[in-house]
Length: 414
Ligand SMILES: C[S@@+](CC[C@H](N)C(=O)[O-])C[C@H]1O[C@@H](n2cnc3c(N)ncnc32)[C@H](O)[C@@H]1O
Image (cartoon, rainbow, N blue to C red):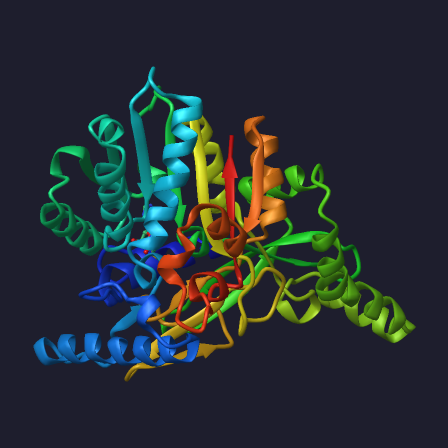
């Protein structure tokens, strides 16, 4: 199978996929009261304590050593993170679309549904005339998350304004003719990637495949026939100027080309010649991961939602990745400990596989595919523009909303 199919299966298979089975997103009974917290260290302590209590409660009902518990800025800074996004939506809506159009918001991958509730609460409390014209639609792949989101809608009293669509974004076939805002927060990181390695001598990219044998062992192999989506991505990328990418490519991939030339004695050349008839990873560069699903998403967004404005946020950098360029973190939680592993091919369903996003590349790819503008900002800059900072400032004047998630960026389009 293609590596992207392996990743999709490992994360989303309805029976054993990571998101179908063990994944739980942390949430608090009550928001953190930042102005009453001493400083960032005290917040960290408080958060760790609440995390523990949250899991103790779940374990009291059903003990589970394999529970995959994680947190997102939406949950940690609830409702302030959602309120910042509500302000962004409202201000842009008033400038661009009010009063001709209703405010239509799509959210792909809504987790517990917390962001939706926080946005609708803010609109209801601050701009009721816009709230009554707001429709909020969630597109969610995971049945468990859908159930969670439906509970959140019911509790919040926004039932009339919300629709939860249980579908993968990639199976969503409705054409949305109206202008709308499209939110994607911490969803890109789980978009599957293809894997290529480069032939050391010809520098040709080769498509990576995974084979699982009867004993369940994983084997990688490579062919020179690129999958059409990989080929399309690489073709489009040639049109993009991204100096950071070029630098990284030289360091991680092209370095091996030079090494091969340096070591190419007659004997070595003969050896490589023989080896090159079969492509296994030993005679190739380190892998490069190609965001083919992200490209597919952008194409889908343009064709199904031609008048959208996209707002997405995700990690621009991740530590502890597996080997390669643009490589993912592969991690699991066992007995409440997070364990990152060094290989991509692991027992499906037990591991999260998450990729950093190259925001320069994705923004330029978006512009290339849509003909619209995309802007990229750090999470901190975006929050400085749209959040009510006093809500998340501690007594010491430290502000975790700005200082946590240093490795996240935001892209918004117009
Ligand atoms: C890391 S969680 C983020 C949740 C939420 N946005 C937040 O920030 O708290 C990712 C969410 O995206 C959903 N998801 C992942 N891939 C998806 C896809 N292709 N279509 C729709 N939902 C998807 C997952 O089930 C999950 O709800």
